[in-house]
Image (cartoon, rainbow, N blue to C red; front, side, top):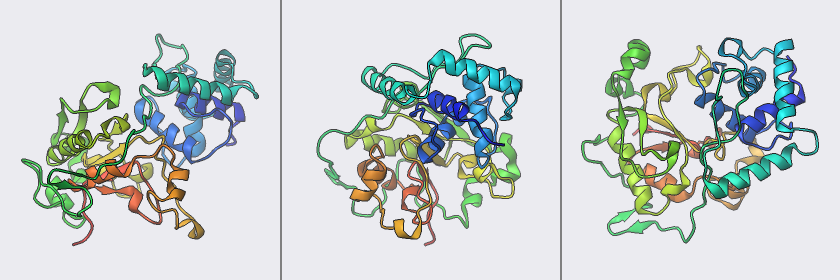
Length: 327
């Protein structure tokens, strides 16, 4: 299936990135986030074309039963109407998206709206947007040194983070338990610092053993002055890696993994000549101008989280997981 350019533009506009009709990692990250935020969309992560069409169908206000990622006459009409309503012509689409994002960043108002009634088009972009940390980075406060390589054990937390070899014994076997079974081991966190996920101070779907570590990580982010960098955290999502049933379950299925600010911290696979793009170098900052700061990453590492940005063959800087490497 070949997706028409106007459909990609509609999906990009709905996901809050420049509607330029060009496919790339930033568009992929934004569409994945949109997918994650809307239960009506159920498309395998590896199916790029169906993901694009599904987001466009949802944005155009098509009923849930027709959001199937298949481009046909009904989709064509609905998406063309949406494109016309939003003024996404060839010359103005990117400018409109940038102007919209600038306005939202300044106001802090909610912009990702769901349909007000069945069949009406959805508007674009996220509830909150990235805010830079202003001022010098601080790595040491009192007796906490983020760079010393030690891990803090939170109250009621795990003394040692389980490795992949034993994690199922500790967290439970999510595949054997099934979605309903593993959900019995999840908790909701309340009264958390930060403005993420609508600014309610809540996170749902966190494994009860991971909960103290996540709470302490966010408290450290607040203590070190970087908590407002975080505007979006995704937690539990019962699925196989990349939505491929031939792969193992994702750690999100256990409630022990997080995706943070995915739009700005998109995943990518470096080519051999790109391996020099290491975290927090000038080359990294050029690729991720709005990426998570080193201080945020170190706050999560300080309580035991592994960070996907450290993986040299597949950089995934949005991703954190409470699983240790081999000891």
